[in-house]
Image 1: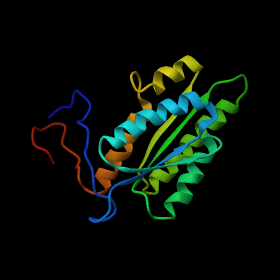
Image 2: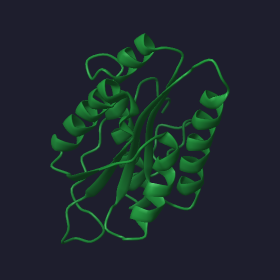
Image 3: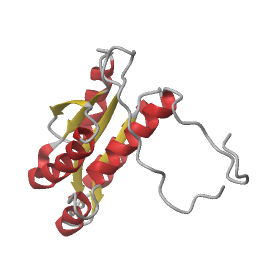
Length: 170
């Protein structure tokens, strides 16, 4: 079956074992506080609609998000992580460094097996950030939660790959 639309939303309730609820850590860099508040609103709305235990950890900037996730993962209490922040292009190469290195750090952790939704916005200006962060428009906070939940579901074998060329699921 060929997929022409986004997959349906998941509902996950169980965490690391059958006796614990699903637990997500939102790691937030509130450098642009108005933007990260919008990202948090979208993320929390998605998580609360599914009764998922949620905690928030604030770090100074986007570069600190990957190390914070790594340190939190060593506590072995979270099923997944959502990175939330905003990097707006300025007049120097600092944007490229922060945007690229924060994304690389998150990707490296994902390749280690952590389930992370990346909601760090990398934009040209504040207007782009507002549209992408607003839960009523781009809702990138909610989308980052959905990404983390899908990775958790795949890791827990609650969803499986499918053959896009047949009507039968794999």
